[in-house]
Length: 387
Image (cartoon, rainbow, N blue to C red; front, top):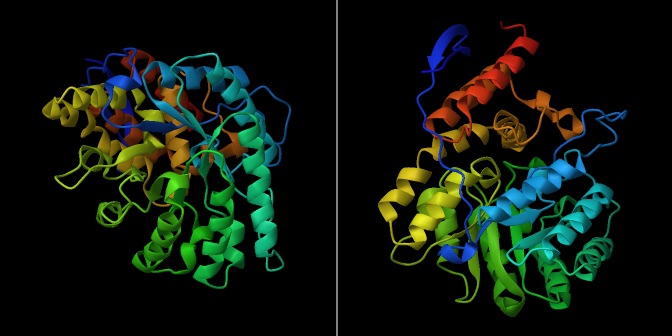
């Protein structure tokens, strides 16, 4: 077996790989009994002469090739979301170009499920921002996506979180935007663990009270809401909300800690999926969803449950830095030739964090080529002075 020296608990110790990689196999979404989106990352251009903290440089060919990989596995693409570093290195001008290019790629396929993030991130949050300005900002991005033929994921707004004085302000904004939507949208409730600026979203720091306002919006606009993705990292809160949704409205799990059991569901229902971790574990997610669709529930859990410890590690606090782990795994798996991120975010996690990620990825069987992964891990270790 292949062995590598890794920093563990402050010491360099040998680690022997044991995982047998999950087979990469093309699949069709029609074989899945759940709708499943992977929120996809962007690939930075490491050769660009730019200032990474100020101006992102994107390798468009590799970025778009990764979307085709997800589609080939039967997964949908949730485009220009927080996994793509939206609001953490990727601004609206770059997101707009990403959306345009991704929709163009999707149009050339018969099987490409894609939905695009619409927010207000081109509007700088501040005390002077008005509710009307927030509405116009949402409308501008919505018009851009719909004009290109895209479906919408309605992202949470930092500007709204800062400007709202009462839950009714949220109701006013969402009612206005949802009434205008050409197709039913997915609402994304992103918790403060992912973005501290969103604390108190829906007008209350108590998630259950905030949920009541969100449900009020959904019930009043059910015909315009395909579903809601909640990212609160609490299976109890997700299930509680799922059981209160109108019959035609889906729950898309955004719980990167408990997704296996939430997708499997219970006697009262299940969640579909819209997950950043599916970017990193796409072959495992695809194989598991096919098994679930064929009523091979035991196989579903055997494939997906080992990925949960990996996901919990990648999404550990500070959760907003999870993108570093997602991109690191893409590097280990040969999906990009470097470990460089938009905004220089490759520095957001420690070497010990990356070493533990490597170990957990092996145990989850998501290192596509263990020998290549070892060679690339050694490159990263050498940069940090570990040889």
